[in-house]
Amino acid sequence: MPHPSNVRVIILSVLVLCAPTTWADTYRLTIDEQGISLTGEKQTAITANGVSPAPTLHWREGEIVNLQVSNRLKTETSLHWHGIILPYEMDGVPGISFHGIGAGQTFNYQFKVQQSGTYWYHGHSGFQEQQGLYGALIIDPPHNHHPADRDYAILLADWPEDRPERIMARLKKQSDYYNFQKRTVGDFFSDAREKGFFETLADRMEWGEMRMEPTDLADVTGATYHYLINGATPDMNWSGLFAAGETVRLRFINASAMTHFDVRIPGLKMQVIAADGQDVDPVAVDEFRIAVAETYDVLVTPEQPQAYAIFAEAMDRSGYASASLTPKIGLRATPPGMTPRTLLTMADMGMPASGGHQHDHAAATEMPVENEHAGHAQHQQHNADDAPAHSMHDHQAMLRQQAEASNAHKTLSYPDLRASQPDTGWRAPDREIKLRLTGNMHRYMWSFDDIAYADADPIRLRLGERVRFTYVNETMMNHPIHMHGLWQYLDNGNGEYSPKKHVINVKPGTTASVVVPADAVGEWAFHCHLMYHMDAGMFRKIIITAGPKP
Ligand SMILES: [Cu+2]
Image (spheres, rainbow, N blue to C red):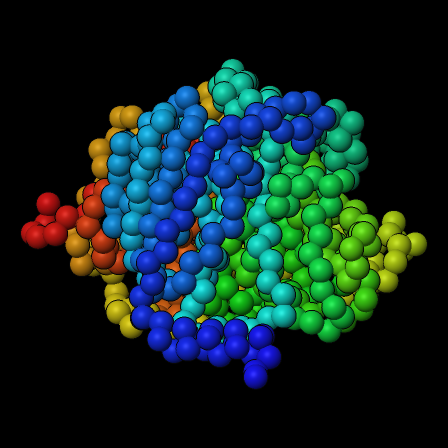
């Protein structure tokens, strides 16, 4: 008589052997709202199956998924499968790919999963994503090239104290409402001591002329946001277990509405193995910046039986999210101190250091593609300055200090990303579309080429053509540009090994260029993924048709 568990193994093996090459699984998701108290006050979150973040969905490459999404809200809802290649009617953007899911209705999404990796899904109606309607989407490949002992999705998010409609209304009235980090008169005098009075004055006047602040790295900040990892504040301390020496895969997903994060795990090197779901040649880093809506997969191997902090500080340093990787339930990591925020200089933005009072578009256009963020160099310096303050900390701080002393603090940047597999259809683009990323901070208007979505014609592409999109960022904000339904091959000098991404972050005053194979007929959304920028008009529709040139 075989042991019962052996019988189970035998049955499972038989099932695996007999499994068809495609599966068809059904997932039911019910969208509703529920009381939540993350900030101490009672608020409302939009939930899927009663939870926010929404449940993590596990798919397999090759399966046909049926997703029955029911709406119990009083308003319309939708779910968009972020980064997924699918028929456009299944993409889930109301007004573009379908009519939305009305109150009390159910919509049935169905498509074949043609890719693997880490993605996410979120509401694309109103501000529902900001209100908690987001979740991780993990697709298993037929063959896993990166076996790990543990595997965790790390969803980063920004949860507001104010209602999103109120945030938008405040930004429209006063765009720097949430920015309490402006340089003060005191800073002026200390700068004047260092740089000289006239230099400092000229610097300030230039910024004044541009009606921008050199510290405006984010327009919605920790003044209203609580930063979350897997729905938990730093106090709540989400924890992932490991045993010393195990390999842990962390799937970072930036599900924030407005926040870029700088991520590190003090004491651990991170091997970046995938970007936006796609495998890249591994890069060992100490830190990476993750733009809104991007995903990065990393491997870590914690050797010590101690708790490690997964630390994600908001780019503008107005707050942080923190969680623990721990060998024991209840053992929590102490979050390290935040590093000082970066100050943008005129040079960061492609402006002449002095005298250039007008917006110099040409200067911005000629910036090399994706040069290293000058602010980051500064940041590393600060790290070193910062170190003595943490010297009484534990082992982690010591390791970090050692790393810094040996000048080994490596931060990921786009030029590091090289696809593991070449693009077999690689060839020169057929044409170029240049888009300026434009905005008026004072009136909180955001657009492409100074034209907001409401007044813009769609961008028309022909099926089969390859189009270079060149994004010229003429603003002092980062804009994570998301194209639905199509891959953007980031032109970072790697030719056929260019990494393909669904979100390309374009830093202030810089230019980034991508190659897009127009390989999917339909109507696709194309926008900045900062929610309030998208809502303000930094959005276009792309229409791809078969047949002769439109
Ligand atoms: Cu934007």
